[in-house]
Length: 219
Image (cartoon, rainbow, N blue to C red; front, side, top):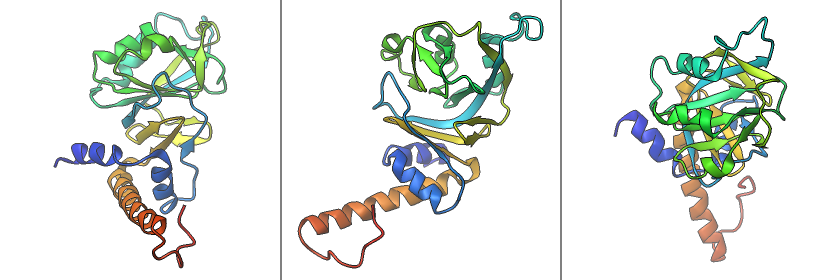
C-alpha cells in the first residue's frame, strides 16, 4: 500500500483523542483544538495542510484586487491541491466569518478535501450537502470581508495556540482536531491505531471480568 493510502487507512481507524495521545508520547507541545463546529461532524478531515493567513482589512494597504480569497487560495494550491486541507488562521478574529459556500466552492475543483479554520464559516446547510469536511470556530451569518482579508499563503500559522506548518497533517472529526508534524504522520497514526486495538482487547477482557489489575494508565 502506498504511503498516502496507508495514512488514510490508518486515519479512518482512529479518533482525535487517539491521535493526541500518540502525539503526546512524542511531544510536549500542544497539538489539539477543541470546541470546533462543523456542518458534518461525522465527516473525517485528514490530509496535509496548505495555509492562508488573514489580516485586518485595509483597502489602502491590502487592495482587494490582490488580497482576496480567490487569489490567495490559488497561491496556496499552486503546487497542487489533491488531498490537501486548507487551514485558515484569523489572527485574532475568531468571531469573524472567513468564508462561505460560494468561496469554498473553489476547493471542490482542486481536490482539496476540506477546511480547518479558527474563525467562523457561513452556509453550514449548503456545505453539509457537499463532499467537503469543514471544521471551524462556529457558524457565521454576517460577511467578514470588511473586518479581515486573506493576506499570506503557505506560511506557518497558529490556530488557538497550535502551530500548523504547510505540509503538516490535519486530523479532525466530531468537535476536535489535531495537527501532526509531516515527518511523523505515519509513526503517530500507527501508534494510535495499535493503541486502539490493544485497548479494545483490554476493554473486552475487563467487560468479561478477566485480568482487571495492573493497567492503571489506560484511558
